[in-house]
Image (cartoon, rainbow, N blue to C red):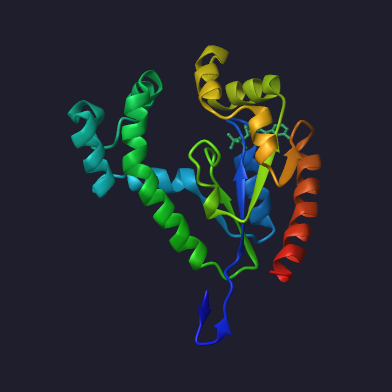
Amino acid sequence: MATAGKHTPGPLVIGLTGGIGSGKSTCAALFSKLGVPIIDADELAHALVAPGEPALAEIITAFGPEYLAADGQLDRRRLRQQVFAEPASRRRLEAILHPLIRFNIKELVNSVQAPYCIVSIPLLLETGQTDLVNRILVIDIPEALQLSRTAARDRLAMGEIRPVLESQANRSERLAAADDVISNAGSQDELAEKIQTLHKKYLSLSARN
Ligand code: ADP
């Protein structure tokens, strides 16, 4: 945005996305190690429903007191089951949370001092939030690997992961939207090398901003 004749561009904003278990958190941690600011939509969503937050009160009003656990925390598991079972519930929850998450992302991007930042948004494409970012970085892995890594990480059965996978954009939809793609079918060391290469690319792109 131009202010008093002085051009003050914001940082280059990279939207990091990919399916469950594709390696978003792992990639974000690698970028973070290189000093890149990370804005994580999942973390923002968690913070928004902490006890005492207005969004938690809104959710309880919309869904009912049975979604509040005895310790005052949101019963996330119960809510997740409900929104996967009923699309209308999912839309109701999104209508409460998404505007707040968007607002917080914009605020955080505005405060970034670095040449570029990573905004990790698992449902970047599904929720039509691509206007928040300048480029889309997709983490791509074959579905079988996605299932096995998620099962190992979350100690879940494949049958529990499938509905999540099916509710998300598929591999080809993601690849079609990508400006950059990282394949995470290899080792963690290979991934770190790929992140290094992208880091250089993003620094050079942001210098031209
Ligand atoms: P997401 O954040 O996209 O759900 P994670 O970054 O948590 O995915 O990765 C899913 C799981 O796979 C984690 O347990 C992570 O440690 C593991 N993982 C990620 N990348 C690799 C890799 N290249 N090789 C082996 N395991 C990996």
